[in-house]
Image 1: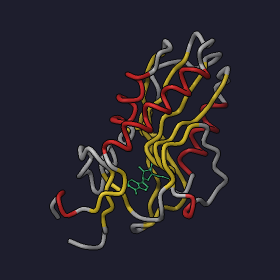
Image 2: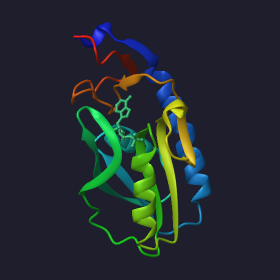
Image 3: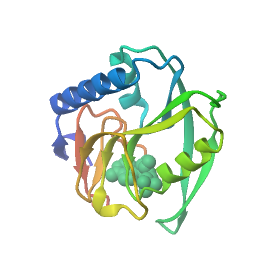
Length: 178
Ligand code: IMP
């Protein structure tokens, strides 16, 4: 399947504008924070995080975490496991989780529970996209880029079988074709 064949859902310009607006809100909300840590969820959030972080006007540090959904056959079971933990201690710090996409919501829920057990001063979430039609658990996102329909999307960090991550826009792919 060639990149050019994919239908654009969110253009590069729309992403740029939305990321800038999110960065402005986050910078304003955290203006008084003195120990903000952005937690990027690998691997899909790496491009979003890089763009967002560079537009923040408040001091912040960056760390990464990696999670994986347990699958049975090719279907997620809702269980999540930790593949790579943070390097940083988060107790007493202001934590902002930065996610690429919230689909069923299990990953974000797991992450919020496991990070809040480490007693940060605050814990908020920022997601580039979410698919409300697919949520299986209640999902609360403090800073959201875009709501999207129930389709598989790639680009701007998002992948299908590890491909298409570096497309500059977000495109729809049909995982069953080619
Ligand atoms: P969850 O179902 O909300 O736990 O999301 C699990 C993970 O599935 C996300 O963090 C993404 O890595 C991946 N995912 C879900 N939908 C898509 C999509 O449309 N494109 C690319 N990755 C997706």
